[in-house]
Image (tube, rainbow, N blue to C red; front, side, top):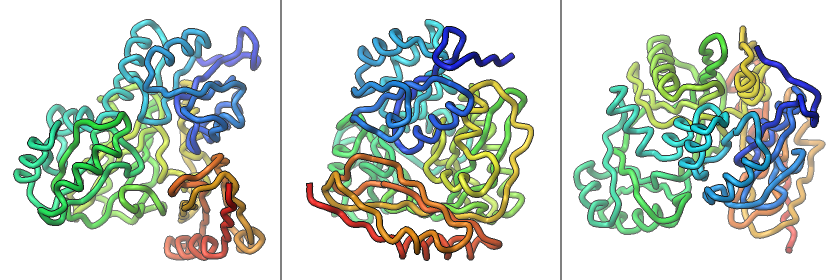
Length: 396
């Protein structure tokens, strides 16, 4: 039975966020709705979730010794990974010592590493995926590309948001793809996965909630990416009922194998009625930000509800909705968003600014949300709002 005592008291509950970006910020908000004390960790100061947490620490979570030190000091009831770049072996040790890792340390360990989750899905669970090979050095890499064939996709086994990802279209791209993967890995240079280039009709994120009384599936989310990084998403993605049923079966099989309670972002390729597994995140998904306007309980609210051991008897979907990331390019710690009166002039349009302290290169700094009677109207509306937004990048 779930019990929550007075916040900041000896009977209160405490959650520790490993990662304090825009997704972690929304999770922190939902935790605080239940009176949970929130401690936020990230590698840079003033990260979004830190701005609303009770306390925060700044360090690289790949530093297992420091991570252990903070966790042993804080003694959280819930350790909630919100990014991939974590010393997951330390989380496994801490879980074995009695700490509660969400959804499980195994899930965090396997999904941080593309090799771990791909081998689980394809080799243990016998789920259909694209053909793949792994490589640890340039010679193995060239052999993997030869075996998979061109075109193919190259990714570091540990990265997110498209970092280090590229497509090999000709032999001339091979050396460059290797360098991109080595520079873009979350834990530095290292092993990569080479995947066959799959011709699919569309790809989806199937948000799957494992909670105290079962598993719930949200409406499938379609999305558009640039170099593996989310730019737009919409819900629901139209799907044939046969493909949807198959997608749910795959999502349940994978999430059951990972275990624990919480929301999982299961990424799938759809080709006709055939469904191929791609990846899974044991946490809220960036494409799932659309749920902040599309339904009564967002992915963040559902994640927290499940974490606390509470049931999810139903999720009320409102109507077709879309999201569009606000990506800023430049080098500044002073970004001003303007013309907001026009951006929000239409009904059923919302905006969220993440509060990230600076941008170097390009960075997702906010998201626009819109809903409408049809999917086409929702997507058109969110793009119309985006076109009205003025971003003024001031010098440092």
